[in-house]
Image 1 (spheres, rainbow, N blue to C red):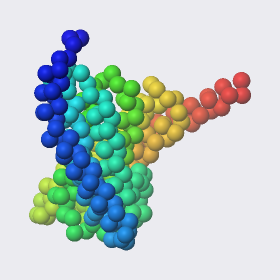
Image 2 (cartoon, rainbow, N blue to C red):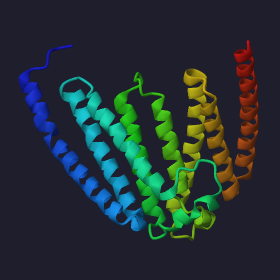
Image 3 (cartoon, rainbow, N blue to C red):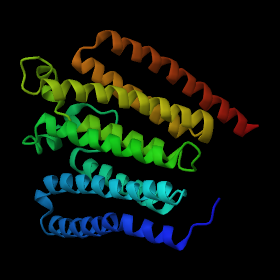
Image 4 (cartoon, rainbow, N blue to C red):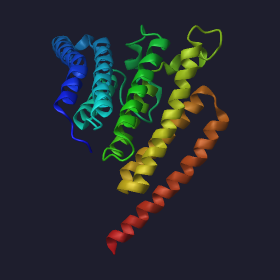
Length: 269
């Protein structure tokens, strides 16, 4: 690798200065919002959503710094990427605090939380989770395939899938899939996104179990996401899809039982 000259470093620092300034500003706003929440925790849901959006903006600047480093200096800025990963986790966590982190749970278990954000329309909710999904994808692309964080992204993707599901108004979702509904388009796209992400999370946790950890908890989490997907199909009336997922659940559950018995036998031996 060619040596980086002082001039190249100077140009790089000059290029990323606006991004670093923006990062400092966002950090200050986050602290201010957290202090307001601390003083008035009973009225914080919209402030937490604002924090989730701020963290997405923060992550975007951190990813940009890495991209500029790759372009100008031909090196990956790991510190910026790691900061971006932490910012995306914080964004997801702020949303979890608003709508819960439940994976496979009936809507009634967290409906009260979703009711608190009733004034946020379907289009704005869908836009927020789309932005979050894009940021996660950009971060993973910036890290590349050969990264030590490969399997840690499974958890981030899973938690993201859960909040994408939990932020939608499922009580009115079926009614909003009527083309005459003003919320038709964002609701249809949001539901498609939910189904895709839940299936992806299930497959990724299963892959993590098979190829990396061999931890039963990972396989159980894969089954939880699959069960959550079936719950969504049933709720919106996708009978054929619900039956397909049900069969897959039965196969995976049988595999889990077999693996647990095998592991217990190995321990005894």
